[in-house]
Image 1 (cartoon, one colour):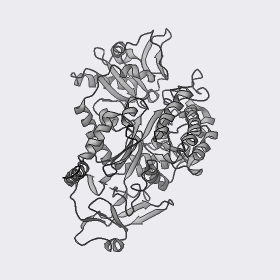
Image 2: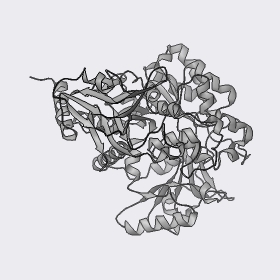
Image 3: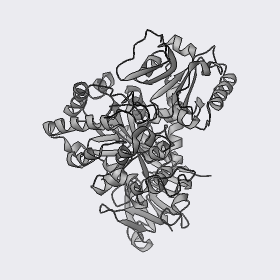
Length: 557
């Protein structure tokens, strides 16, 4: 009688057969192949072979690979196209990516009137929705010099509640109906770590920053199992299309864990997921009962990290700064927790053996967490857990060497720099900007950067991230020459931070991240050579095929 684990394995293999036929050996021929070595050297190959379990058995020239492959192997000719290791996004939100597509999309709105028009159009074409929900507004692009208001949003829809998250996810814009349903009045106090934007008379104007958004979350309708599965299906499809074979999901609970395991058991998890439990509250207590999950279903899923949040975002002035904002001297942003409370959360996770990954954007947020790591890592002898700073976006220059000294991984998102360039220096001033988005400074001291996108806040397309890392320009090529170009990466460094170093940040460098014997055959075929094209064209790279564990999970038609 087969064990439950064996039954799951057999079922997984059967399901994977529906994605790509299973053969004894498979050989990728005529490749313009690139991989990386542990010494950060580019390795070239023309052939890649893997067995029916999805593990690589040979990489090299056609002659070298031929000697290792059994007769009767299946050959796939990629006709000189470029083959790269599967790309890894070290910080994203899988269910958020899948859910966003079903609401109002304001990422392209260039003005407040255009955004209000888009909300109104959506509301009229979706009369069945009890709430109008969306994402992506950015008042900085609109050149308002202020946040939008509930009254302005009422012009688009006043009968039903409207709730729209800002592009960075750290503020939300509500109409008057939504404010009323959430019970937000002049008398409502700002919660710890949050802010209700108000007019001169103290009335709520419609924007809730950071923890104040929980007031709205409490009354939002909750998605059911059908909606959650649809969101996961949609996200997995998007991730495979852009060449991501693994993602680090920054903040999951029991629902997400249940579905990730279920999809892995049934061969439906077409992207590897490295999970971080959101906070150390009820979900952590439930999910940590059986200790960290280092690997599940042939390395398709892991749950061995915790995601905490220190502060807010720069765009909404929620990022915690050591000195007041240069463009608003009345505020320093928001630390979500006092030092003792934050340290208690870090200690709870570390004591249980979990990697601790903390969102920190402002220099005060980063400083708080570095102090916490300094106090706790030695106490729990946990440097081997490779604790991380998620974003490490604005760091005072004297704190940057502490990352290396403490063994903290800077988990950074290149497109944040090119998206924030329109307001970052105004927020920080000329001196503080020197420690912001400082990739070269981190690399020079020997830190290993794990790159991601923070999707759906930014596009999940990793080639846009590589482009930003190399050029320090946005997709329109602005600014000419690059924004603080001295902090740019080389193409090889950018590829490494989206492959091997992202894998290392998840304790997975021995199984994924490069194409070498014994590792999983996670790779992609793309339409251009990143090392030969004009760097400005890297972001336009098209993925032709995506393979995970030797199974083709996406092919461009």
